Image 1: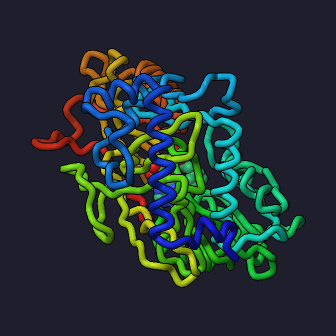
Image 2 (image 1 turned 180 degrees about the horizontal axis):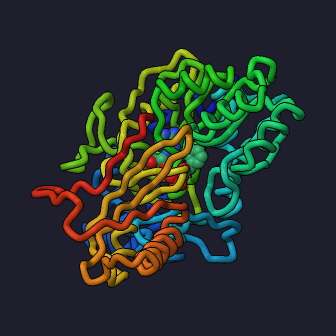
Length: 432
Ligand code: DLL
């Protein structure tokens, strides 16, 4: 079934026409209401009247995570605060999170695109959907929640964690759709085995997995372990949250809700748009959002697009599974982590040297992050108590910035490998 036939099956010409009109309207709104964009456009010598079709997108400036940070917290809002009914946030490259805002219409759009995604994955109002994404500032829990209600499914808002309860409710309630990160889905499948539950005896049938990269191999493993069909749902807080795109029954890319978000793929070096089929950095322009519209937001996610009609009948452009990132962001247990966040903490600790190494691994299905830190010779003593004190101090500061637990290992000065070119600060041993 297709949730919104008119929007998901229109011809390319109709879509371009719709995008043209919405783009013009959005550019005019931000020009008049957001100083940041007005100044950016003025410095490029363009006015709203210069933007008439999506071909004109290339004239517009880019927006980056840094721009959001520089305008923290509310500098990019395009409506008065009284119109804003919700805020969400995700971690940024420093301690400050990236704040995003929604008007009532934006919350409706969010629910609409998630309902579309769930329907695209085969969900219906007869489903019982267990939402094991985190609720709170993260867009995963509440985003999927509102979309599921819009779909008319029965929502079990259990949030993340509490594995034994997840399994109990899944069994007792007869959950048919599980929504969580792929790594947690894998963990649940293993926990099921340990608990003596046979997945084949459960009515569970669909998985709505995203928020972190995962491979086809991982998809097969999860499908086998949970006896379900696993779908890939993509999104990011800055654009709206989950529901920007989702895979359909043909698992041949993710359909983008392009009547709301216009995608472009850029060559990561030149930032020039590339043709369909060529991989590059995914960039979105939101054309219907009211509270915080973004122009050409550089996601740093690598993907490619195809405009071919899908066998499912949808005509919306599809993006490939995310192929990687053009920056150094890691996603550890669903949390976005930048090595530079660790660096900024270490620079503030006199005992530590700014030489460090992040070792990411997966034990069972849980991601682990070990940070090896070089300690200044003056402090590297034989006294256990003193070293333990330094270790705890670093651990506490790093954890408060990253928002996840870490293992800190102290090493002597000059032990970590120095590099002659680009410093390699991350070893990712996960096989995803
Ligand atoms: O992760 C929104 C979301 C929630 C998507 C639940 C899907 C399901 P952020 O915390 O802002 O938002 O992180 C966004 O996560 O730029 C990608 O790097 C990564 N990401 C999200 N979905 C996928 C996916 C949410 N399906 C960042 N595959 C994005 C690979 C993904 N990476």
